[in-house]
Length: 153
Length: 205
Image (cartoon, rainbow over all chains, first blue to last red; front, side):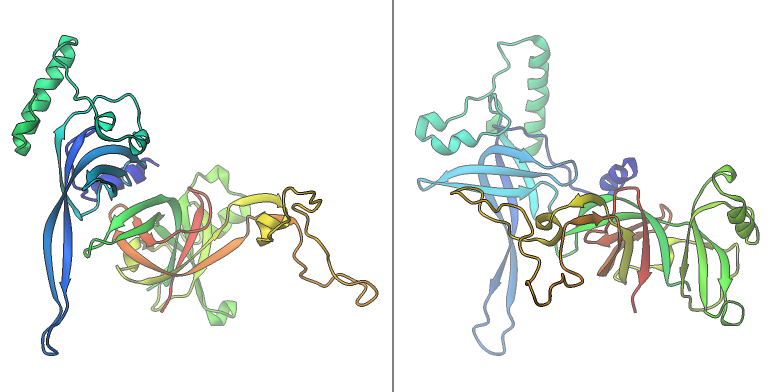
């Protein structure tokens, strides 16, 4: 099995920033749009663009190398959930916007909640131990790198 | 060039193509194999090349096996298999995974996982009866045939029995990637047998 893991690592999978359940993330997805031919001479046009989906990570599942994560957001009053394969080339990037404070590995209970009840508290390390505080500063540095300035607490 | 190789199933993983579609692949440690014997029409009545896979220690083999392997050199192989070949090969020659290339069509043969003695629902996909509402027919095979004529059960009637642990060939698979220096083949789809089991990979023209 070691050999399997080694190969998985060598497959050149894109590395994304660490994110956890309850975090608010911005997923940049590659979308290919096909424009139908208007005239007979014209060919079908394929255009690629990046679509952004921002929401709360409510689940991560699968083993290393074949992992999925579910992002949930409320769009025009309707709950929308999208599942992305973590290592898919279609996922162009993931930005962590906010760290969430949750006590579950799967946040499926959010589906039954509305408004304020569906809000996740932001994780705040300032009142806990020094070790945790060190983690926060490190995280903040990482946020600045990804260009998410508003995420700093 | 030889038309197949013997390998060891290492497990499954996911691979993305250039067009970003996901392919499930099985990773096989294929070779290095050594040619043990070249069988020809004149001497054996048919033309095949026998190769060995997975070196083992001398003590693990019996005397007739050792005598057979001695003709090809001082290597001790755990598994032997025969393949057809285009072009001549010599005993003692080493064969690596590079006989395959990306996109080749292959068939894979292996012993499937044993399931033991199983009933007709698992073994033959019978529907079974209702679980409740006074039903007294649950997972039994049901009627085996008619009475006075034919007065016997037809051959090949689907009945409970031993399932799995038989030789299965999966056709129509393709080679997704070849890593010669690691002796690794990535074959599209799934392959019979447990992880660590021996598989035979044959080229399909």
